[in-house]
Amino acid sequence: MNRRNFVRIAGGGVVFGATAGLTACSSAFPDAAVAAWGGPAASTADVRHWILSYAILAPHSHNLQSWLVDLRQPGEIMLYCDLTRLLPETDPLSRQIMMSQGTFLELLDIAARQKGLRVDITLFPQGEFGPATLDKRPVARMVLSADVAIKPDPLFAQILKRHTNREAYEAREPAAAALEAIASSVAPHPVRTGFVGGAQADVLQKHRGIAMEAWRIELVTPRTIMESFKVLRVGPREIAEHRDGLSINTPMVRTLTALGLFDRSKAPGPDDSATTGQIKSFNEKIATTPAFFWMVTEGNERKTQVNAGRAYARAQLAATAQGVVMQPLSQALQEYPEQAKPYADIHALLQAPQPRYTVQMWARLGYAPAAGPSPRRGLQSHLLKDA
Image (cartoon, rainbow, N blue to C red; front, side, top):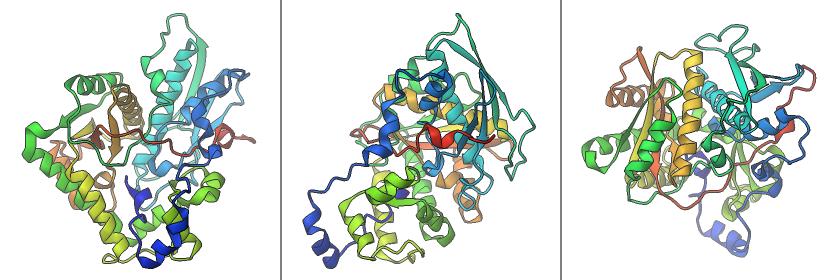
């Protein structure tokens, strides 16, 4: 997603004058908001806290971090979904939320292996959620036990380095060895992966076209762009306070907000400069994207969605190890009515006819300068205090 960049294109003479004195201001996120990326303290008493300190660095839709854990039972971790952190407009069936539970579980498993621990994971121990709604039942029960046969996962070394990169990518395609490493990384989970690059120019152009149209639809649909606005954090104070969502700390946007020129209470019109400028910016990035990556599953049950999230976490870590970056293109995979055509188009293009198959992930792939980490709420925010 490029949502956090949505308002960067607003401007004009008034804004230029207001921001002229802010050129020395840093766009970096406040230290408190990204402290979790330093890893856990070496003296962490409960090994589960150490493991969870890595799990909370998993990728999550809109960076909502909807993970709650119950540690009441020694040697166990119970995972719940925070039902106050859902995306009813852009993810009405909570498929992406379930994938985000899976990314958490995968990083947790990888971190546990680093400590010589086996994690026996039971998904939906009190029953699986329905196809359209979530509830207060647990997502997973994890039992930890020492096991001399457990070997560390090489992907552990990439957890603190993994970041989603939404900027422009270089024109060169990822190396064949990198693509093989990404494809091999998902072997523990039942997903079909694929890639497209410049050797298939016509197909590559079709991918680009679907991505552009799906992004345009989300921008011009008031309720879906407002869902992003609700979790948009502008400036160091908001970012440090929330440590989640879509964060922007650029001087121009901070000034627009301070002057009351950026109204987050209503959606911009389809012909507003904010909308047309962002469409142009996104299209330029997509037009030069050298490759795309996808994951398809047979079926779309809740367990399938969670396991697809686990697979994606591994794929992104493997890409990081190869110096390759990714950006999920979630819009065309979303199940709200306005996206029906892009949704059908990407499924047809990837030979994933519904309802038998579901495209769970579709992402840009390439090389780009390093991106910084996204804010994280910290471990204490995810621990159930009165479970």
